[in-house]
Structure formats: structure tokens, C-alpha cells
Length: 212
Image (tube, rainbow, N blue to C red; front, side, top):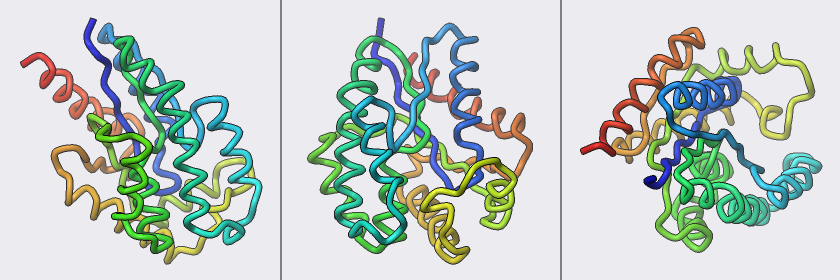
């Protein structure tokens, strides 16, 4: 049994990442590939504890660097307790957000710089990166409209103004342009089934690349 693959879903609020993560697991299962879905910030007991602490404070409570250090601590727990063991066991791991969210939100959105995020990430994960990152892209207004239609209170980032979300969208597209070999842009304006079809094409290519 070979090593599993690591796929991450990124994008702005309301893009449907959690829905598509579940769909990817179902698609891989149909193809006879064992897969699990996880999330960030979180994905392991210690990481979920950090998530609760992080989300308990209003935006601006944490210094941006302090916030990143909390996220990286949670990521380390996620990696060591969930992601890496699963991959070594041959299981594919699908994560709703990972390091590209930190690069976009804190690195670009909060102005820390992507190079700072990448340096910290290297200490946490070394040279480990996702095998495939899918950026679910849609106009900010459409994403916010979907978000407000959901039940429950908005979290600390969902409460940010439209300009911040526009910055985030541009950040994800910028990252995708810089790493086209790893990051694919998915048109998330379409119906969920059409989005799943786009994603399935990318996954099929990843599967085929491992057979060569």
C-alpha cells in the first residue's frame, strides 16, 4: 500500500469548502481509495482546543503574529496527530483549509507577509506541502450572500468588511498564479454538482500522475 495523498480546499467565505470536502471523500471511496475529511484550524484534539481559544476572542484581540503562532501550534498538532499518520497508512486526507489560508488571511490580509508565514511553516512542517490545493473561487458578494443564508453566528473573519474579503480573494488568486503546478482554481459560482465535477477532473489527474 502506497502513501496517501493530501488535498486541501481553500477560498473565501461561502465558497462551499466543507460541502466539497465531503464530496471528495465520497468520490474517492467510490474509486476504492480510503479517505478522510478534516479541517483547520482544528483537526486533532489539541488543535480543536486551540481553535476554541482562538475563536473566543474578537478580531483585533490577538496581535497578528500571536494569532499566527496559535494557528501554527494547532497545525503542528493536526499534522502529527491526524494528517501524517493517515498518509503513512495509505489514507488520502482532505482538509478544509490549510497553510494557504494562513498565507492569505494573516500573510496578505493582515499584512504580516507571505515570507513570514512560509518561514514559520517550515519550522512546523519542513518541506511538507499539499499534493493538490483547490481554490474555490467566487465573487465576494456571492460568497457573503451564501454565508448570511447559513444558520449560526458569523465568526471573527466572516464579520470583516467587504474590502477585507476582496483582499483575500485576490490573495488566493495570487497564490494560485505563483504555484500553478500545485494550486488549481475552481469556479465555485456554479451549482455544487458542477463544482464537484471540476474537482473530480483535478483528482483524476492526481490519481493518474501516481500511476506513471
